[in-house]
Length: 377
Ligand code: PLP
Image (cartoon, rainbow, N blue to C red; front, side, top):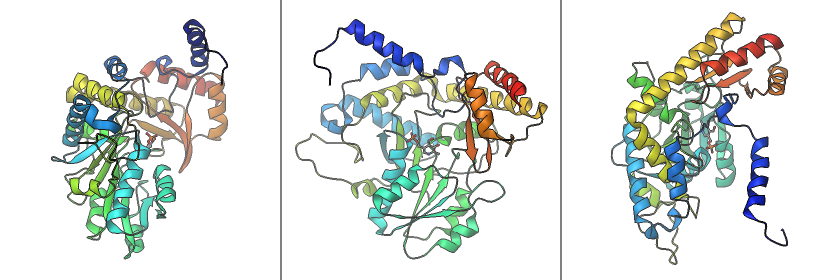
């Protein structure tokens, strides 16, 4: 710890120096992130609510009302009625909390999820002492339903399906998972990335598999405003079909003024993120998100074309704004691109170069990236 405090000007300079070493979304060269630059109005809202703490919700009825409106808005996008939910720190916390609820209600241990699932499910199983059962993918890179069925037994806690996988943006066959779900087990859908993309693709007339609460067996869902929702970090949404289920993870805290509060893993909870999510959703509306998703898909199609022009084939035709391309030695290509300032990632299943076309990635960025690739390959 520093012995004495420093002047603000010194602190700002130090912060600027640190920030200058970081990547910035605004230069369009980060093509590996599932986050993006939040809307300006979301940043403003964030700083307006910087001191409020929804972990002590009784003090913040105004913020609680914003959260209610945000959850109602996200629920309606996901075809849910009046369900429970709240804003947590991100997809990881939402996924852990969903399995926490499922475990406490079923009393069972086994969680079946696809190999494409985000690593937060391994964290959840570790923390909650659950037994992970990882299932292979079929030729469409979605969960193998027959293998899921073979693994169902009396100890089943939950089946997890992914609506927008982290690596490929694939959507599992949630309807088929629903059909084989035993009565006392949970079906959780991780739409951390897909939640703010798939509903708009569907409205654009694209054939998106059903994945949301219109399937009666879907119990809980994750959808992250800090990804394609254009909100600030940390904003993840957890939606829970039945309010009573949330009570099963509730803990008493008599010293706090908790009326109306979400039972969550976090104690202190960011109200700034709630306000930012409200501001992003209020500013864009369905129309604005649709435009954004359309633009991201246009840039994705452009990337696919540029790839094909140099003989690079996609792992699958992109359904969402993620494109994985087969390239020889993807790790080496990734490193060489990084030397020129381009940040892309490498997918494992199958090994390929992974590009995420978030709103800060433009056609021009894609042209710059592929010009660099042509030099490197
Ligand atoms: N689920 C999916 C499908 C994801 O892609 C991610 C992150 O990329 C997560 C969950 C975890 O989200 P977070 O990083 O906000 O905890």
